Amino acid sequence: MAQYNELNPIRSINGTYVPVLAGYTFNASDVSDSDSGRTEDTKMHKNMLGTCAHIGMEWKLMSPSESVEIMQAFSPEYFTVEYLDVRTGSYSSGVFYAGDKTATMVMTSLGPRYNISFNIIERQAH
Image 1 (tube, rainbow, N blue to C red):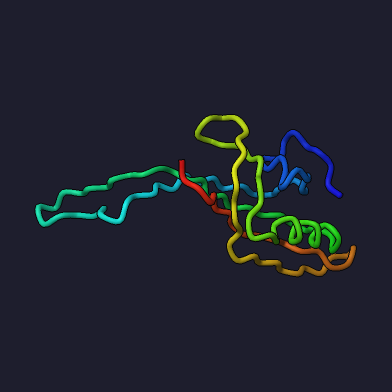
Image 2 (cartoon, helix red, strand yellow):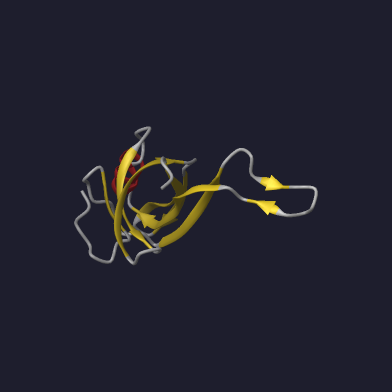
């Protein structure tokens, strides 16, 4: 089981710590209403309803047991994440779901290790 690490941009998933990430990409995605778009006068009408977080995560050279821990932590349909919100510079909490997950096996002198990457997307815009 992973331990708390103050340098991890993902503090917890459903209250459980995960291993420290090797890569963290924060995106703030705008959500616009269905009438948004460009009119014939070429003017854009965005009609923004809110913004949601979309986070890309990557772990490098994880042991088989750490890899299982990561994949299982993000396997529920929805999960609560405490994450570093770059918009505020502090940690926030939100309900997310995961996109497709990739785990690439790398053979090392210590045996198999895995590079894991996937995105999580905030369920509700704010």
